[in-house]
Image 1 (tube, rainbow, N blue to C red):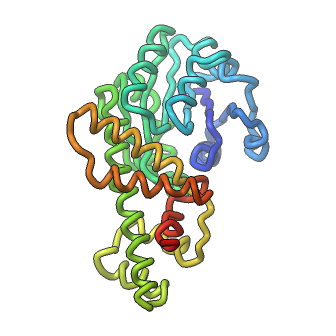
Image 2: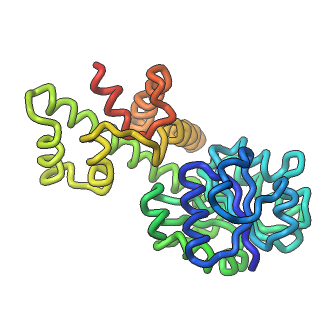
Length: 284
C-alpha cells in the first residue's frame, strides 16, 4: 500500500518519521517544502499530485480550515485520482466540519476517516499514541495496519463525528489539568518552596498524573519548546464550547481554562508548548 502524508508540524513530522522508521515508503506534501527536506522521501508538488500517487493519505493539520483547503481546495486531494482511496485525518477538527469532509470524499468515491490522536511528540516517536477513529469500517480495517505503526491504543467509534467529539472532551481534561498543575507550582513558589520540590511533592501526592510527569522538566527548566502548543489547546477548547452550545449544556471549567490559554497570545507564548501557561500564572 502506497502511503502519503500531509502536515509536517511538530506532531505531524514526528508521526511521519515514525512511519518511515517502521519501513513505510512515504511520500509527503507540505505547504512549506523546507520542512520535508530532512525526511529523505519524495515530495509531491501538490495534494492533488500526492493523491494520484498513493492509496492512503494521512493528514495532520492545525484546524478544519486547513483540512478543508487540503481536501477540497484548489489542487486539493479530491482533485486527484482518488477513487477507492482513503483519507485518514489525524487533525483535531470542529465536530460540525467533519460531516462535510465525509460528504466531499464520498462524492469522489473516496473514504474519509476522522482519526484524532491523544498524545504529542514523545509518544508519537515511540508509536504509543492513542487513536480515535470514526468512519467506514472496511476503510478502517484497511488503514488499521498503518495506524498501528504510531498508535498503541486504538478506539473505533464508528459513527461519524464521535471520534472528534471525544477528542475535544479529552482535551478538556488535558487543558484543565495542565493549567491546575501550573497554578499549583506557582502557588508553591510564592509560598517560599523551591519549584523543583513543589513539583516532586505534587507528583508524590494529588498531582501524580501523566501530564505533570510529562511536563516536569519543562516546568523546572522553563524550556517551553513546543510539543503541543497553547494555540492548539485554545482552538480545541473553542471547538468544545461550540459542542457544549450544540448540546445546550454549560461548559464550566473548559470555558475558564480556554481564556487562560487565550492569554498566551498577548504574552507571545501561543506558539510555545501549552505548559507555558505556567508563565501566564507566574506573571500575576
